[in-house]
Length: 75
Image (cartoon, rainbow, N blue to C red; front, side):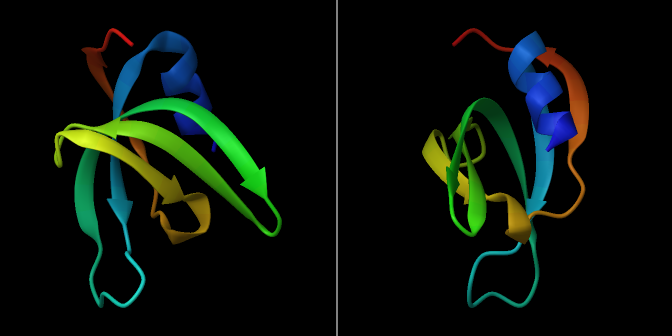
């Protein structure tokens, strides 16, 4: 969550590995994180997913480590 929070504050693109429910292997996504939502018992991050070219919401408990990039985005 720290990496995603920092990326949202600094407007940096983040690479995440996400394990979608029902899938066996995670996919790598390039996302622009915008906001967080807590709906017990999970946290979600609302993003613009550059890989899918559209808005996406991801559960934090299904993410693998996130990596900051040097690429900035405009909301």
